[in-house]
Length: 149
Image (cartoon, rainbow, N blue to C red; front, side, top):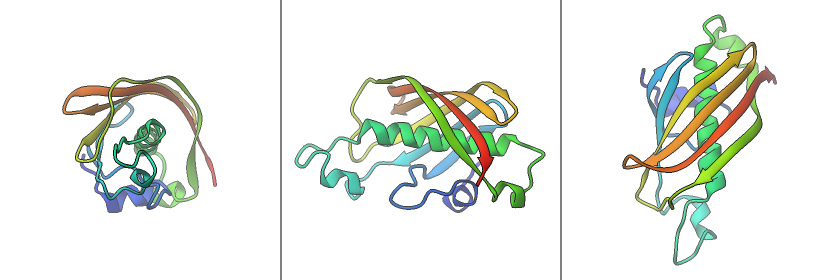
C-alpha cells in the first residue's frame, strides 16, 4: 500500500515545517510500515543545526518515526471511517530506548521502518527504526494513544 503526501495529510494533522514523512511505500495493517523522508539542505532545521556542518537533529528523526507510527495505527483501525478519523489524533505517551547510531545529512533518504509490538484498544506500542541506505541510524520504542481531538 503506497500512501502519498496528500493522503498522509488526511491522516495526520502535521504540516510544513513539521510534516516529516514524504511517502509510505509499504503498509501491512497491524504489523509494519515503511516510509521515508528526503532530507534536503532546504530543510529549515539546517539554518541552526549546524551552520557549516549540517546534521539532521535526532529529535526530528524521532518525530518522523512517531508520525509514521501514527499512520500505521490509524490505517490499522478497520472499523474507523475517514470522517471518524478526522476527529481523532495520535498522542505519543512515551519514547523509550532511543539511540542514535550515525548522523543523517542533507541528500540522505531517511527510511522509517515501524512495527507493532502490541496493540490494545486505543493504545499502541511500536518499534521504530530509521535507516539511510540500509544502515541503521536510529531506533526507539514508541507508545501512543489515539484520542478525540
